Amino acid sequence: MRLLLSVPLSVCEAHGAVKRLLHSDLYNTFFTCDPKGSHLGSGGGTSWLLERCYQSERNDSVTTEDDGEFEGWLSREQRIIIHSGGQSRRLPSYGPCGKLLLPVPIFRWSRGQTCDQTLLDLQMPLYEEVMRRAPSHLRTLVSCGDVLILLNQPLPPAPEEADVVCYAVREEVDRLRNHGVFFLSPEASDELDMMLQKPSIREIHEYTATRRCVMDIGLWLLSDRAVRVLRTRSMAGNRTKYSVFADGFKEYDLYGEFGLALGKQPLRHDPLVQQLRVKIVTLPEARFFHYGTTEDMILSTVAIQNTERFSEKFLRATMSRHPAAVFQNARVYTTLAEDQRSIWVENSEVSAGWSLQHHSVITGVPRNTWTLHVPAYVCIDVVPVRGGGGGDKQGWVVRPYGFNDVFRGYITEESTKFLGMPIECWLRKHDLRLEALTNGNNANMLDI
Image (cartoon, rainbow, N blue to C red; front, side, top):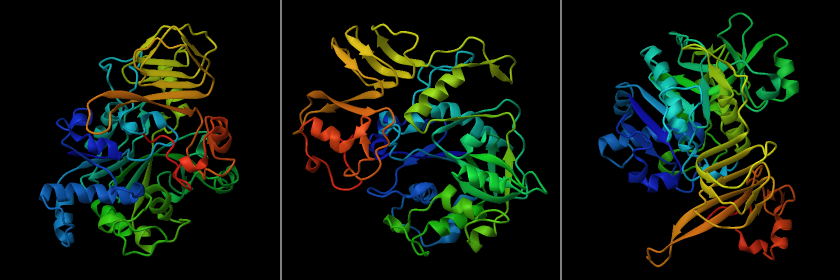
């Protein structure tokens, strides 16, 4: 079984340094990033990742014209694909390494975990179990890099008669509207009628009038037939409104395009995708944790710590609540009060001269004797850099950002915020001009 990872460009460029973290020896890992300057999405990215892995094994950089040879390679072994190559706009502190390498504290009720564990470490046991129990024709697992699923009961088997198997959990309506949702046929609990991405409350109520709904956790099993269809839809030769990128692949979303064409009554018309047989496996007692945003990272970590194991297989809420403050590989000399919530300090020193409020993430801060006030909803990331001109002198770059900043939108619009205020206001406050940034949507706010 192989592990294929989609990672940020910075991880690819630091190939040797991250091989251990990405379990290159343990799982026979292959990792790459989208073509430079492009964004292929989860569907196009899956096809690109498979193609690059295939080419690397052939030791040939030219895209093959022999589909039969690719399909033979595809059928040879199982593979786990995890996507973590996005820009991480809503979680800037771990954008350069990807959310897969986000450090996760040891669960206080656990045994056998390690101090340097990452989200990838915690994801892999479930994915391996899914593959062990998968029918032989479902050889490819695709998952998001920013989720963690903890099971409270044994994993149910995957259906035999399917090209696509999607795993799901039951969630409250308020949470459903931020994720993909499967609407199930009233005749069978594993039959998909249609899928929606981030539906409104009105849509959820409308479609559940005659159907049951469950939330997509981003964990899908694909047959070789489904991979071929996905690959076809990811190639630039198909009709598309999207940009075409390197090596013939284009932007195509697994969940937002491919997924919306699955089921008995799909809302997206695509005859090729609709030929695929799809089944939904609901994990009734599973717990779903999302690491998509800065706030999600803290809330998920604290929620996990606020559970405990009361048998070898089951979890329950614990009476001793964990404070919403997380410290990893950190020296914190300042005093924190009980009401200072939603604080994350990792790989940093917070000296006695610091004053923290609440809702702050501090990462990468070196040893210091600074006197520094960090207001609420302000985060600080410090990055080591080497001097220009080929010199070896090391320095530091401070990258502040807002706890709820999303780094999306045009910099001239009032709704586009930095450190919690319209970006134009922030620039004026610091005697800076818009011309200091790139035009349009791609402002280099966190570039070095």
